[in-house]
Length: 113
Length: 114
Image 1 (cartoon, one colour):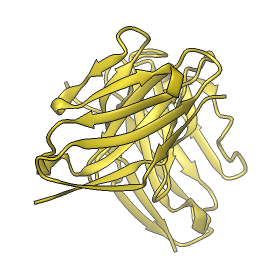
Image 2 (spheres, helix red, strand yellow):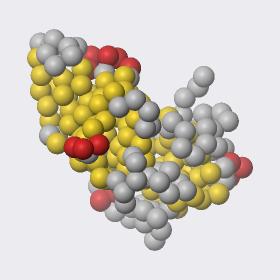
Image 3 (cartoon, chains in turn brown, cyan):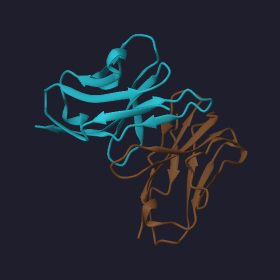
């Protein structure tokens, strides 16, 4: 069974530029999560989708971050414009449904200079 | 709201020694608790989970954790450390709301010395 795929794995941008991350969850998984993991901290949930609807985006900085999950499968997370404090690893996870085990992708390491 | 606190951001043990990683939780409802492991440049992998059944939970790679309600703890142990156990470990608690989201601790980096 293929795992959660993410791309790119690494990205370096300058502040005020925009960036997008892509996630392909495990086939058949209804729930998709985006986490931000700053160095030295645990992952923090940014947004959670159930199929193509948003379940929780309370910690998403909506002035600069946006995410979508068209057709309830792949998802894209965008940052525009980026700030230095956005430097982090962005993890995507999926689960069969709410409250089921989450499976994590390898993450995208973003460096904002 | 639920939260977890991991005591000790870095733990070093000798190969073959006992591994003990500490986690205390705060929850207004009976918690669901998890331990995840993260190897360098990889995503998180579930080690074990407590879901209100047995208080002693066995996971993968020889790890286990004991839920102690009186101490609000869920410490992770392994009798004998192996070099391959070197990684970062995260404790997490699942929320009781409709979203069932996970809240993670800040992590403990485990170093295994030869």
